[in-house]
Length: 147
Length: 297
Image (cartoon, chains in turn blue, brown):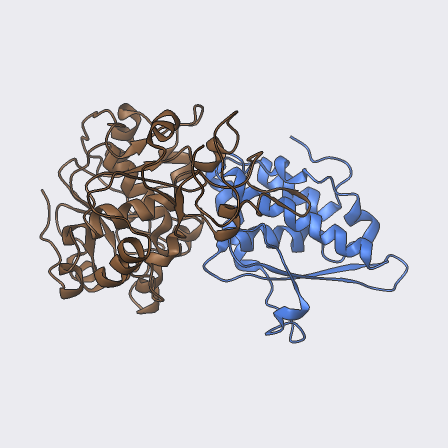
């Protein structure tokens, strides 16, 4: 299965990686991604009040979105989730790997249901997957409200 | 074969102390013949980040639920599952997991539907084991398959279906969800519907006792005395009552089922696994909203 054309290149590549392997390897991939989630930069570390909580996730997840004032309105993403929530960290890491550094327009164009193409539905319950939809919705809201 | 009980003094005060083991006990008994250790988590990846040596993972979503019908797996599938995990019918199974043993209690309840005799929880679950700096490994065991017999589920004793809950109205019910879910305020969150139920509120007459009240700070169960204070003194439940517990899909209420049945010794407790995702979508099912228990007119 090929990724929808509207996906930014790095996200499209991730979708291809996931959909190209079996269910067990998809979980392994998600685990590796969860370990690669970048630590918070100093300006956010310990400052959860300056981040937005993604309540739809079953574990505490905090998100910060920055939109630069350059021509592309480059989007930067920062997430904070505890180590005992690797699935949530994995989802956040997909967002960072796939969308961080992309122009605002590209981020807003990502289909809300893009995560279905990752093929995680068989291994991860719908409720868990909803967390990913919520992350994208909140990212888009913040990008929009950044003007 | 089964292994000896944990005789720790804290456990001795519970109605069925043989249903719990402490982290100390488990550390001493790891590798004993006849002992199987199972991790069951909310987070599907947590086991893979490191688990108790020798433990196998059981996933509630992919392994205990039927993939098509909203139900649990049947006896054949359960026998196959436990056989593959190397668990025998007479083995002692100790289950532990994340979030105060929330999903571990759910797995224990499902094992109990199949009448697996000796199934216990690790008091304090994964959190306590980790907090004590005990050993974790990423090595996934490759158990010798066991010959687990096909035993069909008995849904009559500890499981309740919707019609049985309707017939039960007027007798004690425990709603173990959050206060917002109980009152009916929480149904939708910004951006998309949350719980998949079209109506909010609770089953009329149900007491509100969020499940995690039974857990202490360190994720162990509260003492017998503290649990009695909550369920008996505060909520007025009595061991002679027939009680039905419910939540959203029956997972959090398995935890409360465990507390009432095994720690407080209530012999007639059932878990309504259809819970709010069934009740809140059912045409003409009576509902009470707000913080009062309400009653059926």
